[in-house]
Length: 162
Image (tube, rainbow, N blue to C red; front, side, top):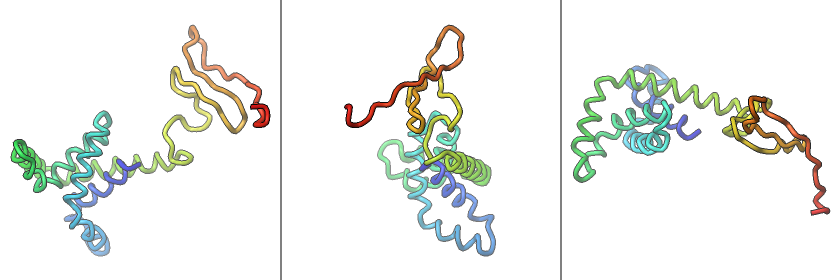
């Protein structure tokens, strides 16, 4: 969820020059925080590096935090130079990051409680085991010689028996 929010903020700041009217005022309020949003985007991008949104956040972060990257001893100049080079495609990266952020945010809201994992009614991934608390059934999707996932009923213990 945090990656989606940071992606939306980074996308809005990268596209700030394209907004007019009321949108310009709203996005203009984010401009003073561009470097902070960029640094957070880099950190979240590193944590989410295995996903598309992680790579997009890294690129957006390098553009937004180019001035702050210069302060890093040893490699700061090269990182800032990379950020300034990416600024040529600022609008394209801004659109990509904004769209990815919105899609990820909507997909997160679509799940109950914003939790990760399979949506209700969809079997879990291979090898997962859990318990459906609503009906007191255990489910497993362990590999079983080509058979589909099994759902096994288990008796519920009362709290007084434990």
